Length: 329
Image (cartoon, rainbow, N blue to C red):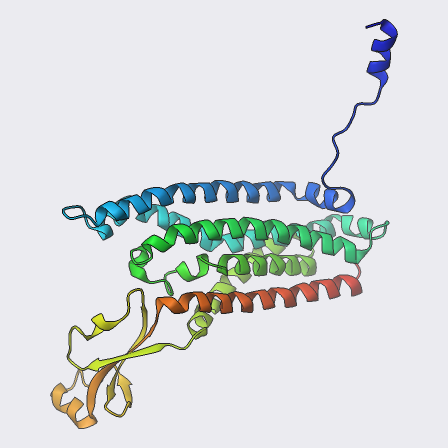
């Protein structure tokens, strides 16, 4: 190659790789790329680990069912209970983490530093700015939580009778399987955005979002049992094996005693009486009355619950859009 050609090659502008994102989407990704990449990495690694664990779990359950082998319950507790506990704790805390570390700083950081005013007074309008911010954060949240929720649900289903004694309603399983982690995470994301938008300070917004996440979980504990109508099992009072009639995978939510015509009394009625049998006979108590949710009700309850949470998330999103349009940045 001649000296002239070499010189031209050195002075020619280097070819740049085409960007997937341009303009405002590229700016939003660059601003929050650390949080986005951490979320994506956690979703990839977490999903891969759970997919890998499922093969071993199904193999263990298959061999534990063979004659002369260790029982499935004991084998599960020995080999997989710690893993499920850790995975459950992580997935239960995931919505709050998203709200605190992604939602709260999303707008608060720009308002605190003054970049929101700068960006929205240039060629980019407020509506486009906030829509891009919310859209990209929601897209990353959606993809990551769908992957993690699907992987954990797929892992949990073969062992659903063993984890937490089969209690899928009160032990946290309800909120970390199916559509629930996705809905809760999106709700906490926009809640963090709204709090950050109002408070304008990142650290304060993060702290308040964490408290809001805890409060939302406490409130949800009261809502969860109301997502379906409990079914009823009645059997004669004193029948020690009557409770065995509950369907496999059912979760007992209340226990009463009743008369033949269905009048209910508290389970402890007449227990402390000097003559409990005579007391029950006087009241006409003849049956145990058990309220429960069947395992087949779980999916319907989850989709209804997810719909409620997504409706709340949509309402908060509308509020955020309205506030950005009408208030100074």
